[in-house]
Image (cartoon, rainbow, N blue to C red; front, side, top):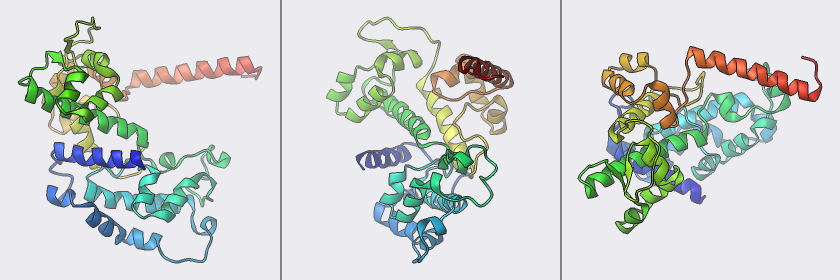
Length: 314
């Protein structure tokens, strides 16, 4: 429960730090940042909520199927998106469902692997073994992946504000965590610790350490570019609807950036080492034709090696 409250607090803070994309919603920031009581009452009055909370004599297994769970989860995520400004393609933490009053959906999601399936997942080779997870079946980005993405974006935004407040915006030196805590920014210090510490972050952001510790040279990088790129990716996810064919947060391609009118980001990506280098520094997945073929070749080689060790004929 403490982790859930911390996640919600970080989401609210990130929403206030970032401006919403103009084309993703017709709601104002005031409507998006309504108080918690209005959120709960509005979401619970959604048709999906009424449907989920209707009285029924059927047992959980008889009433819920994998397809129904996914359908009701989509409705919940769409409602949550309007009031919390969170993409509807991000798998929520299950404790969130219980916290918002969706106890039946929470129970169904918890028992997803044991629920019957009508047809959608029956052709999956893993479904017969009850191994398919709900985020995979629904085509949603896993909770841990998008939480890392959002907390990193929050870290960069708060670090930028801290440098503007105490360093006149200079990005030459990475601030010491002790200094950050002494200035009353304990949450920023925790985010730095969560994302690898001052040495790793200074290397990623091409900043020097005041302590004089030697660091690896990863090439040029600025906070402004990192924030703009991550904000662009998040705005694109806000426009998506589930299910996703590839539910993963990946580096946008040059065509994606140009199609959205972000030629400025294209130039900066080249300046900061190219698409693969930027993706690795910001923890984003990177795919192209060459890497996909290479991954498939490595997988086939590893599978043959495993069969050889187990004495299984190829």
